[in-house]
Image 1 (cartoon, rainbow, N blue to C red):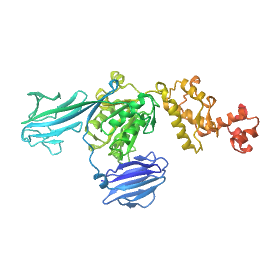
Image 2 (tube, rainbow, N blue to C red):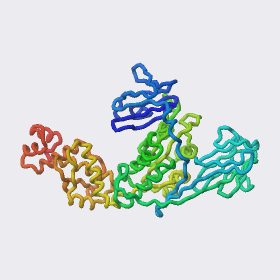
Image 3 (cartoon, helix red, strand yellow):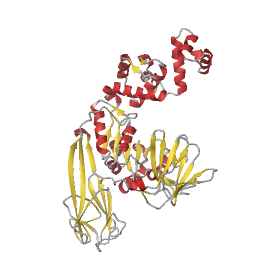
Image 4 (tube, one colour):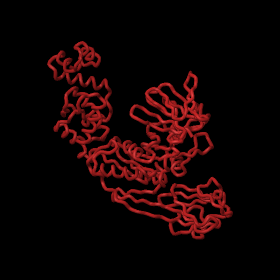
Length: 523
């Protein structure tokens, strides 16, 4: 099995598992999109090497451990030997979280073969779905001749382990009652053929206390709500379970998802984010599951979806409430069976990903309204991490502003970090922040640009648009920022020559920019 690790100047971006058909890397038409990479490249695994195909050029081979440059990126071939030497992940636990009680419930299950040809034997139930039968391909293969090839399937649901008979010859029985589908609880006997199975559950409860630290994984906050979020991320990151992140737009849901990835056991695997509300409805299925060549007009080659590309890593489905209802059963299948089927293909492809979802909607209300499947909701809502809106954590405002302004300094090349005057901080605290932390970030970025070389941001530098009805979370372009900076400087300078001196540009350049931005008409 071949992998490719992708690096930029900040370190590893992703580690991708190459399907046998290969992957294309480049612009928006490729399987993997790398910003700034104009010329697409196709990577195809071959015997003992990866074959690198560039449009209009001769191909070249890359051996394991070799690196090659693609624009601003460096790619490294990996035949998986290093990955195979890493210890396996711990058995998956089932976890649920009660936010009101700040309590984490941890459940571990075991299946005991109490009687039959394969008894005695105990198997930890470390996957959410388990197929039992006589065939070697089953998750639990029995030697009982009275058991069918694929006899029954166990699946973990919100109400417990469900048992589905898969059309067996001799039936499936719970306490001697024949069933087609039923919930199997601990202490109740399950019989298939001559084999008797028992279910055992071990549960423990753990209080999740707020962290003492006020920053974690790029997030800051001294409020109890945020420190509780930090603690919960740390506790569940290493457990390979689904997580639903809630909170209003702009509150930082993707930062939470990235923290779960970075502090989990899949940290060396890729992190692929898909915004379910930003993709054309007809294209979402292809983006998630991929397609087979000829599946539809324009499908000129096989293409892997994000669930294949993210092998060994995390898929983050943002705005999961926007996922079309007809695609929700397919996502449920991914979560329960860890298998996908490309559009136009009959083959099932096994996958290995952790799924993290996020929404700004009330999914329980969406379920009641019939716009979201109840079974999928319960499957993704095992752990629910909720981010509070900014106007409910104003005690974090000064810390957030300091953090965001320091980030602006490193990105803009300023010599010093801009500071907020006490009056400016008070003005920020009076604002309602409909765009949350994202809006605060944009407001401070504008202010840092507009103050020029000044060190202090005053209330007059803050562009809070609440009264005008304009969305203050909308980013300002560089041209807009330059125009506003020139306008304010001209308004306070005695002459245009003085304004040019303050701005650090030639007077002739200032005249050109005044004309360019139409400022001569507004002054």
